[in-house]
Image (cartoon, rainbow, N blue to C red; front, side):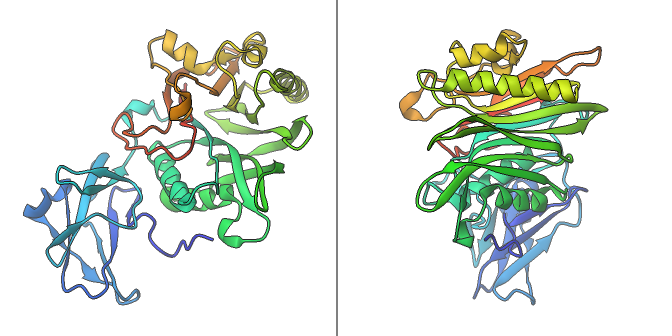
Length: 371
């Protein structure tokens, strides 16, 4: 389990723009905080030892910072080093790294009434640094001020609490970063490897209503979809996370089962829009994608590219460049219907728009803004 009593990352941003820092430096004689907000070393600030946490030095800024992206380091006994508790960092000009944090909202992510949604195949507990991955993911989700996250390949060990449900761990980190209550629904899909179960997660800072999972196909690689309704801006929006097999296997049939389930749920409890996201294991012209687009759903990345809001990029790993298999689909109606305004690859090394976003999975995911 994550020890959330420790500062993760080593700086915490408060809603009013103040920032608290905590550096682990046992045995140090002096620790300073330096960043672009202190003109680096010229205005470095002295940190003080924390009597309740021996070996830890802390400082909370007196004045709030304006919204934006900031870089910093600690100077421990005249040695510059990045914040080891902050997993988000960027290379500096001297062969080292600066630590990074974000204050406030992002003007390029739409107005306050916009709905921001992330889709990502998390691929959890399958790497050596899985816990670091969850910290990086939570930081980026908080920095992008997302309202809902649709996750696939969310692992949960049946016995080892260190590798408990990855969605639950991500939920706790998001609550710590954002100061909000986050709601999480996870459903089992199939057994994965080495005593791990794999499933889908829906996560939102908006309450989840009518949570329901549906089986799309059976067998050892059972596929499911997970849906829920959220209320945002006076609208009821149905969210659905899905993970389908490849087109030459059972993918098209699973897409058809997903569509039937959506239509049944909408007939029983109509909403103002349906937003589907996930790993479809298909390219834009494959049959299982056409199942949804033929039923009136927009392929959001393709739509935004045609409207020149973005250029969709591949979302697979290095060996499969050129394929975009992660999708968000939207079908909305009525005079105040939702429309996609921005769509970007979610996690790619180097980031975009001022947020450093490391690759955290063999997928890069999709981030979209709806108005």
